[in-house]
Amino acid sequence: MTKPYGGSADGLTARQRRQRRIGKRSGYSKFKPLLVQMQEGLCGLCGRRLPEDMSRVEVDHIVRVRDGGTSAIDNLQAVHRSCNQRKG
Ligand SMILES: [Zn+2]
Image 1 (tube, protein in one colour):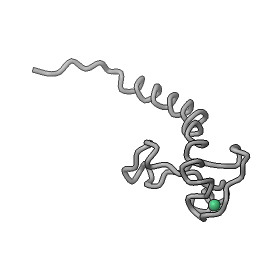
Image 2: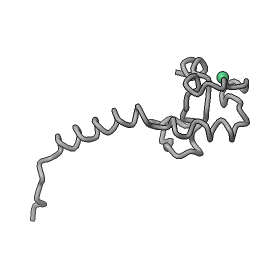
Image 3: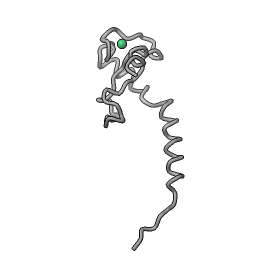
Image 4: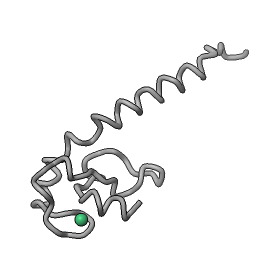
């Protein structure tokens, strides 16, 4: 018996691509204030004080998603934008 194939493999990819685009904009920024609070206002990479302006703070994955890291808050840290870029 062959399994019925929906033939929607391409449609699924398109949907995932759209979701990723939305996620990039709203994404983890909601965790920013909480992460900053948990880290007592210090950058997770350099340990210096983070700016109060949240638009200059970025959320970094401690373990990269491609290395098996999750997008749960315990795998995220607030960092300087410059530190995040240096890390790559
Ligand atoms: Zn930093």
